[in-house]
Structure formats: structure tokens, C-alpha cells
Amino acid sequence: MAAIHITDIEAAINFWRVRKPSPDGVSLGPELRALAEVYALMVFYHDDEADEKGFPPAAYAAWKSWYDTTPDAPCIAICSTTQGDAICKGCGRSFEEVQRWTEMTPAQKRQTWRRITMIGQAWRFNRYSERAAQGPVPEAGS
Image 1 (cartoon, rainbow, N blue to C red):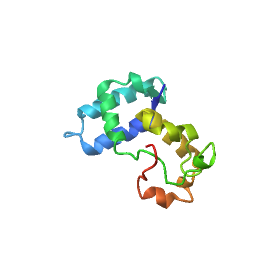
Image 2 (tube, rainbow, N blue to C red):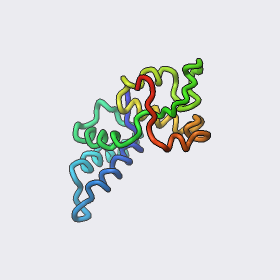
Image 3 (cartoon, one colour):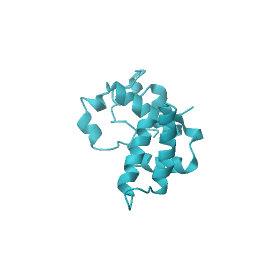
Image 4 (cartoon, helix red, strand yellow):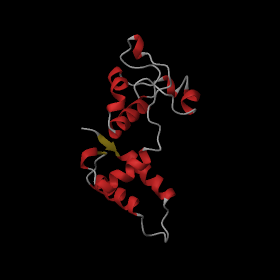
């Protein structure tokens, strides 16, 4: 089951804090309130992930609005899985992740992004980081 990591919820909270700041320094907009409830429960229960399917609809909608502002695919148009590598040297995804990208849920995509970012060995994070910074690159199947 796909899960949303607490760091993504924090990023969504910060996104909404900038987008809809508190008018009085105390009250929260509906998006922030929905995300804050999920975040507070995660902190209370010491969870670092929340199941995508169990998200309250308002919190998921607020998270998804933030998610839609992030790059979709990590592809930098240098795919070594087409040459038989199990893990792409360009983006760091597995062959299966590259093939299934278009059918993955947003949380599954974020889990993949988190893993490849934490490993940081793909060329998108070093050798071709300037290419990755230029923005999304269309890729076959995504």
C-alpha cells in the first residue's frame, strides 16, 4: 500500500502557509487545518508515513494540490534500463518503476522520489544535476 511520508506533509503545510497565510496569526485556512490534523496524529503516534487510502479527503486534496506543483518524473532522458540495467543510471528508478510510472499513484511516485533522492547515486543528482534542474523531460510512457 502506498504511503505519504511526513516530510511531504510538512512540504504541503509550508506550501499552504505561503499560499494562504493566517489572517490573524492564529487561525488556519481549511487546507492547513486538514493537513495539520493528519500531521499531529502522525507526530502523536510516532508515524513517519500515512496510508494514502486512509487520508481524510480534505487533507488528501490539500496534499495533492502541493504534489501537483512538484516535478512528475525524475527522468533526465538518459535511460540505462533500455540497455538492460536493473536500476537506471540517469534517474535511479528500477526498470519496473520506469515501466509502471504512468499507472502509479501520487504516493507511489513520491515514495520512489524519496528513495532515489535519499540514495542520491543517480546521474540526476550529480553528473547531470544541471540538466535535471532545467525541468521535466518528456519520457516514453510517462
